[in-house]
Image (cartoon, rainbow, N blue to C red; front, top):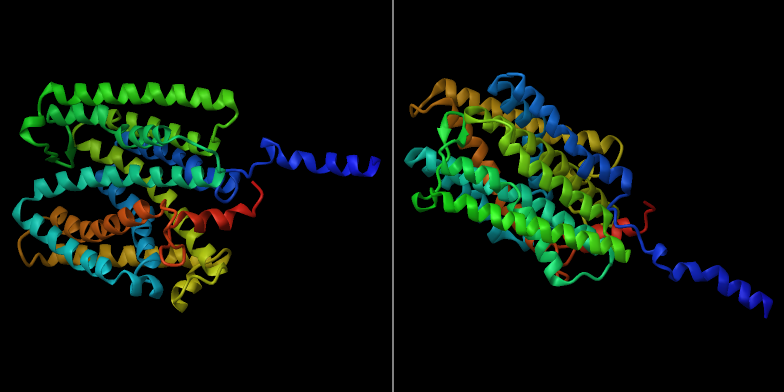
Length: 377
C-alpha cells in the first residue's frame, strides 16, 4: 500500500497545469532571438533615420541584407518544393505571371496608385504574419480560448498600424520618397481617422481586459501575448517617428523586423520538414537544416537579391523606355514582392486550419507544433 501511494504521488504532478507543454515554437531563446526580441532592430534603423542617413543607404541596405532574402526564402519553400509545385500549380502560375504583369501595367499607367496599393498590402502582410504566429502559439499551448478572444487578437493586430497613419493619409502627409500615398477621396475626411482611433481604442481596452483575466485565471499564453504587445507598440508608434519623405525610411524599420522574423520562420520550417522527410528536391534539402546549411540558406537568398538589384541598376542605366530609377526599382522589386504576398497570404490563411495537411502546405500549424512539442523550452 505504501508503495502504491508513493507511485501515485510521483505521477500526480504530470496532470497539473504546470505540466502543460510550453507554447514556445522552438524554445524561449530561439523565439526571443528571431520572433520577438528581434524587434530591437526597429530602434536601430530609426536611429539611422533620425540621424539623417541617406534614403539610398537605408532602402537599399535593408533590401539587400534582410528584405530581399526574406522574400526569396518564400520561393524556396514553394517553387523550390516539388510536392508543393505539383499540388498548387494554378496558384504558382497565377502568382508568377499575374503579379509582374500587374506591376508593369501599374508602373506605366499610374505609378502613384501602384505605390499606394503596395504600401497598404505591405502593411497587411506584415501584420498578417504576426497574426499567423499567434495561431502557432495558440495551437502549441493547447489552451481553450473562446472565438471572440481570437477575434480581439486578430483585430488589434490588423488595426494597430493605422491610427496615426490614417491621420497622415487624410492630411496628405504620407509619402514613399517624394510620392504622396493616396486614399479614396471620400475617405479624406476627419471622420476616417476618428473612426480608426475609436475602433483601435476599444480593441486595445478589450485586449488589456482579456489579458488581465487570462493572467488571473492562470491561462495566459505568454509568448502570444508578448508578440501581440510588441507588434502593437511598434506598429502604432512608427508612423509618428518621421514625416514627409523620411516616413518611408521609418517603415523600413518595421520591414527589417518583419524580414528577420520571416527568415527565422522559413529556416525553421525547412529544417523540420527535412528532418521529417517531407521536403523534396535535393537543392532545397541542401539549404535546409542547422549548422552550415543555415549559412547556405541565407547566402542563396542574399545572392538572388544581389543579382536582382544588379539587373535593376543595369536596366536603369540602359533606360530603354525612359523611366526613372525608382520606377525600374519598384517594377522589379514589387513584381517579386507581390508574388511573395500572394503565396504568404495563402500560407498564413490556410496554415491555421486543422484540415490542412502538413506534408502539402509548408506553413501548416501541425507541422510547427508537432516538431517543436518534443523540445524543452
